[in-house]
Image (cartoon, rainbow, N blue to C red; front, top):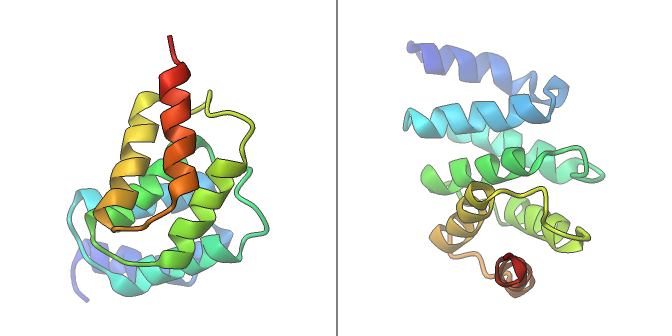
Length: 131
């Protein structure tokens, strides 16, 4: 590739394992926001996240921006979506998620037609409980 994004993607693929949670989220978000498709980069990002022992160090915005980016670019990765959903469902509460985090997350699952009823139920119950 010859564009700046191609160069960034090619360098990033080999470095994803060294990225922190914000780096991972930011690179996926930036490519999606710029509407630049790079399937090998997205595959590497998703595979890295899926291989992690847990997602407890990810902030809500990092999780939501990551699944938003995959949905925006229409990159299917069922294991990534399942891992994120299972993590969110296992949380004691969604108090750390702001409305934008919740909206981006459920939009991503709907856009990619990923069915995860416990996730939608958890988000719905959280919203209903807000005052």
